[in-house]
Image (tube, rainbow, N blue to C red; front, side, top):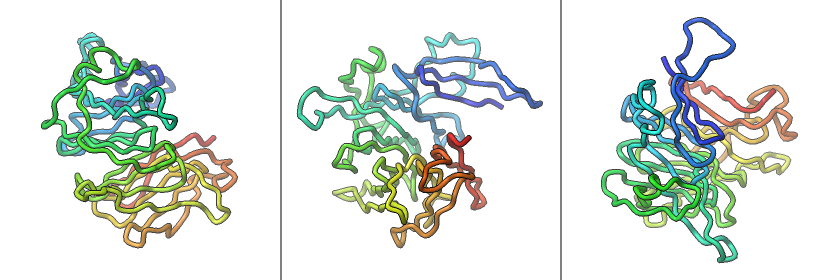
Length: 281
């Protein structure tokens, strides 16, 4: 049993989990993944966890074979990604120097990849059907930039350029939700011309607007969307009603005062319950 973790230095570390409790575990293997921090790491839901996708500060999402990452005999410099995916480079709001948006969340399924980016844009790639294009990023490594794939489609979810922080598939490979820095969730249906199916505001009763830092559904096709918030709460959204139906403090001190710390990760257990993790003390 191994765990994979992304670091602020851009590395991927694989750790062999101990059979008995221990306080420290040394990494079994280390791979250089991104030029800058790793912000996202998610398994491929259709490959039985044989692949993962990562996203980083360098504006790339990258797909990896897990077996290669776990191989301690392979030099970390040779553990290359299966494919690199480039977030679109855009001019900033003043039309000056183009900015490279960080990839804050990424998902992979059925040879399609999605990302939520730091400039308010959601992106989709078709891994098998797209040619490589150079990445206009001084932060991406030369080899990754040379072979990166351009997006198949992209959607500006937030016109203010506020960051998209989280992402979750809703029902299939075409519909997904993105969590916004501006306390809202955007629903995207890639089969439609506009793509933006809905925008659901998540401000609380006191009008506090914490960012949506984590998203998950209990199962594909479910009406419920769980939204981890920056104030330590989890907002439960009905997709059919397009509104919040419940709010839960993830831990003591959560709420509008933000004392509980942000909910940074949500994972369903397959039985309707959800595990929350974050920076709570």
